[in-house]
Image (cartoon, rainbow, N blue to C red; front, side, top):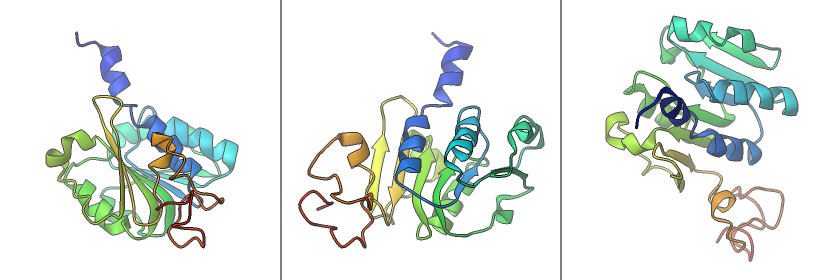
Length: 189
């Protein structure tokens, strides 16, 4: 049975993946498309952890719903087009914006400069034209009907979810491929 509550829940199914990505990255966080769950969650993380968050939104009415969350560390930015988003290195980026055809553009732009990309609604791979073939590491968070891909060319985040002790890093690198213990027992093989 469809209810408003079930619809609202489906908009926040990526939050566990988002928190996991925050835990294994450092640096700025970029959010493409403000959301009922993600924007307040990232705001809280910016306050607690002191990380800088840049949330970009192209819909003026939707943007207005989140401006009250703006702080010194969390910037809520209205853009006319996602072409205005600076392409710069970051710890993580959430890909969850409209229009749908833009998602793959940003995935390609950030694939080598973001440590982890969190791509919501990935069960709709054909609709969003997602192509994750260019990534070394891929994990599908599919606990709910709305799935989320975590992809990276730098960090294998899968151990956060599968609990496999032989994949967990032995150091504090969080699985970054250029770590000296990478490939050793207990570090990603």
